Image (cartoon, rainbow, N blue to C red):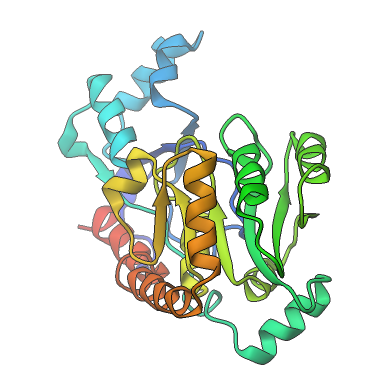
Length: 286
């Protein structure tokens, strides 16, 4: 980034993004370019119901540009009267150096460290928030899939952790792990990842899993279908559909390997951190 560029205009940049829970990441990468002022809303449409909506909307209308992560949020901003030409869609990005496929030795060591030695693992890595994440769905689907030698691993933290632990206690071969500061160990121990969700645009956890060379089973939300990433199976939020997708992927080593390669290549093309830097530079320093 060029230091000092932007002047007074930069101080008026405001970023609006969906208030999704933290993903399985250690936070923003050092040196990430970002607007000087940020605004976060779980749903942009909810601004109308806020008691400070008039003041907030007046403030937002003074912004030079808006950065959103999904087409859905862009459309919601347009619905509030903001010009489309001032709204930039810049999706999540991850460090391709930090997240990458694990070697066989790294995978064995990670499995031993997490108590998964001798088992294959399907990993959910993210926030325990049952209002958005369909963890009950994936636990039920896992029971129906009945995969010998596999474990479902739910790793994370959040307000619904006690409920998630109750779900797991009634499920077969399901393990709940605490939040890990170094999430690359979780991905190294996994053989595939899952993302059951009721709504999602560009999930950072999904991008991290794909960057780690893992195939995934992901809810076929409108945002995911529109993005159509390589390397994942998009499943309707139905337990039988999820069970079928999990079973087919778990029983096919070659397909898992191929999807893992495709997902990594997709992230390299569209979701690497350098692409994110380039997009912000283009916006902030035209």
